[in-house]
Image 1: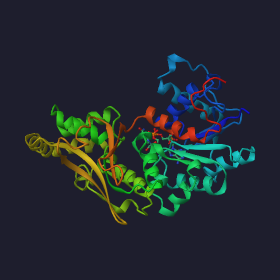
Image 2: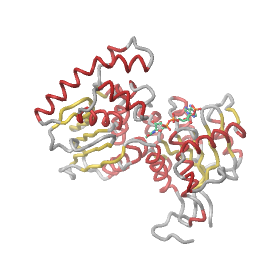
Image 3: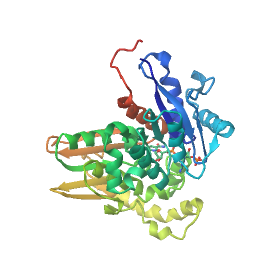
Image 4: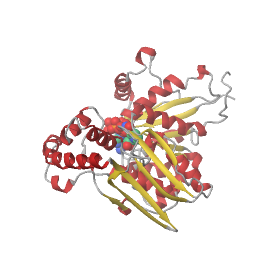
Length: 387
Ligand SMILES: NC(=O)c1ccc[n+]([C@@H]2O[C@H](COP(=O)([O-])OP(=O)(O)OC[C@H]3O[C@@H](n4cnc5c(N)ncnc54)[C@H](OP(=O)(O)O)[C@@H]3O)[C@@H](O)[C@H]2O)c1
C-alpha cells in the first residue's frame, strides 16, 4: 500500500533546510515512481514559528528555472512561515511533538534538525527518541557532540531512528563507515583527517602564494566559505566536535574537553577584539608568520594542513588537532581547496581506508540528509523504478 514518509524540517529557512526542501520537492515526487513511499514535507520551522499540515507543504511553480535558485526557495519558505506560521509557545519545540501526536501521526514522522541550535535541540532530540516513536535526522552536530555520552547513547541506540551522517563531511560516508567498522569489530588503530572546508581552503590559498593570510581570510569570508565570524572556524572547535562524534561512534565516552586543540592562529591575542571587521584588520599581524612558514615549507617540500588525529591504544584514545607540515606523499597532502579527507587505519584496513569528499555546502549536506532518510523508507526498492 502507498503511504508517505513524513518529514518535519526544523531550520527550514536556513541554507541547508531550504535546500533540503528544494530537493525533496524536486526529486521525491510520487509521480517520479522511484519509491512506493515518497517523502512528503508536513512541517517546517525556524527559531520563532512553525507551520504544520498533514496535507503536506508544497511550493507552487517549482520548475527547472528555479532549480538552482536557493534564495528564491528560502524566501518562499520564510513567506509561508510569516503567513501561516504559529509562534512557538512556552513548551518550545516540544509543541511540534504535541501536534504530531494530536494528529495521530506518532511514529510516522521524521524530524530533521537543520538548525544551529544547542541545548534546546538536544532536549528536543531526547524527547523525540525517549517519549515518542518518531525519528530524527540531524545535520546539527551539537546534540551529538556537546551532550553527555549517556545522551549520545540514548539518541543513537536505534540506528533506524537516528540519522547523523551529515554531521561530518557533509554526509559523506564517514559516520556510517565508522559505525560499521565498530559493529564488525575491525579494530581501528588511528584516524587522520582534514575536516574543515574553510581551513583547507585557507591552506591551499596560502600554498599558492598569491595573497597574504589576512587577505585570504577576508576573501574566504566574502565568498561565504567561512562562518559569519571566521573565529568560529579558526578556533578549531568545529573540527573538535567532529572528532568527538567519531570517537563516540567507536564507543569511547569522550567529550570536547578531551580534544587537544591547537587553533589555526593564536586567538587569545585577539580576545579584546570585538567586531569581525576589526578582527580581519588585526589578522594582518599573522601575515609575516604565515609567509615565513610557507617559504620554509616550500623549501622542504612540505604541505601545510590543519589535521585532526585520533590514536587508539588498547582502551585509550587520544584526540588532537592543529596545523601540520606534511610530507608530500602523505595521504592528506594531495587535498586541494575546501575538500575533506579522512584516512582510517585498522587491523583489517592496514593500508588505510580513505574517504574524500566535499566537506561543506548546502547542496551536498541536504543530499546527505536525504541519504539518511533512505534506510528509513518503508519498502525501499532497488533498481526497479516504475510503479
Ligand atoms: N552549511 C553547510 O555546509 C553544513 C554542512 C554540514 C552540516 N551543517 C550543519 O547544518 C546546520 C544548518 O546549517 P546552515 O548553514 O543551514 O545554518 P543557517 O543558514 O544559519 O540556518 C539555521 C536555521 O536554523 C534555525 N534555527 C536556529 N536555532 C534554532 C532553534 N533553536 N530552534 C529552531 N530553529 C532554529 C534558523 O532559524 P532563524 O533564522 O529563525 O534563526 C535557520 O532556519 C548547522 O548545524 C550546520 O553546522 C552545515
